[in-house]
Structures are given as structure tokens and as C-alpha cells.
Image (cartoon, rainbow, N blue to C red; front, side):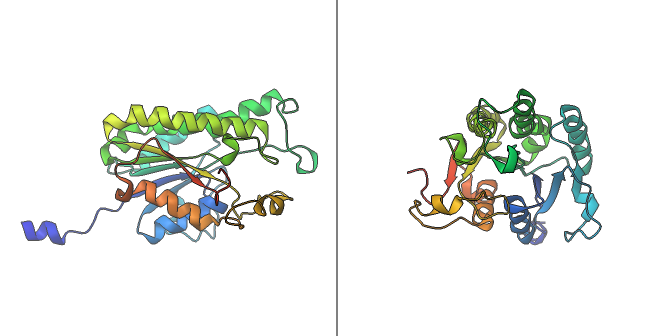
Length: 252
């Protein structure tokens, strides 16, 4: 019997990831998939016909996180995809940052009230809705939650809008509250706070910020994905309530 247990295949872990289609999210899918994880991705778009990931539609949930009712519906669908009732990691990566004409930064004065509400629904309320809605599955797996905040949550940023920045600051505070509340269930909750990462959504002028960074370069999506992976595995088994800054020293 003991020999059978020793030779039994390791349990395949499951990650639920929002905002998986590009940049940090896409790199995160690749990092976890390469380690043998099943990755269930959430996005507003249907799964593409040429999806490169194994299981395709079986591991894709279409959901509009800006719609609370649709988010609740998606939680039920996600539960039905977890045959063993276990979710090992939830990564809340989806985020939106509306811009003005020509991609201009929207200040606290200029941002329409309806945009504030939409930004907070996607960037702040959706993460806690997903974590609360899936707490039984996270608890069963002694899982981990990673919230993706931003350097803009701790200082005024030249490109990130006011609604985006304040939603990320709120998400950082929520991470601490969740760590305290989810901890007794064996669920760890941490955040990563990326700085200037080399993705398709970089704003013109970012090169001027890079010149001031101690490391003098942009970060890569893969570097962020590795940090997310660390926070979802046993390598960080006693880490909770932390916000890991991934910004080449931009915050010092």
C-alpha cells in the first residue's frame, strides 16, 4: 500500500486566471502550464478557434467582469468545471484603465462617474466576488489568491488614470483584509505590484521613466509570471498578506 502511494501520480493543480489573453496574463498561462497546471482562463471574448492551449473551451470561461450579475453566473460555471471541488490558485489579473482622447491620462476631475464605477467593478469588486464565491474550492485545496495591483496604487503615475490608481490602492488594502479573513481556512492571499513591464499597453514616454530606474530597463511579463507562480506554490507557504513589488527599484 505504501509503495502504491509513493508511486501515485502527483495531483494536477488548477489555476483560475482573469485577464489571460495578453501581456502578464499570457505569460502566466505559459508559466503554470509548463509546470503541469490546468489553467482555467476568464475573458470577455469567446475562446478562439485556434486556441493554442490544451482543452481549449473546457478551460475557458467567457465573462464580463464589469457586470456583477454575469460575474456571479461565471462563478457557478467555474464551480461546475472543478470536478473535484478544488481550486489551488486564483489570480486576479484583469484590469482596465480608461483613457482620454489620444490615450491621455484621465485625472480625478476628468474621469466620468460611470467610468469610476466600471473601473472599480473590474479592478476591485470582481476579485473579491470571485474569491468569496470560490472560497469552498480554495479552502478544499488550501489554495492561494494573488491580486495584481500596480505601482500606480502607491503614487501618482504620469500615465495611469486616477480611477485605475485608486482601484489598485483599494485592492492592495483588500489583499491585507483577505489575508486576515481567509488565513484561518488555510488560504493565503498576496499581491504583486508591477511597475513598467514590457507589454503592448505601454504608453509613449515610458522610456523617460526607464532612465530613472535603478535597473535601467523594463521588466518582462515572464518575470512577473514567475513571481505569481512563487506566490501560488509551496515555496511561499508561510507568505500571506504581502505585496511584492516587481518594478526594478522604481519604488525606492
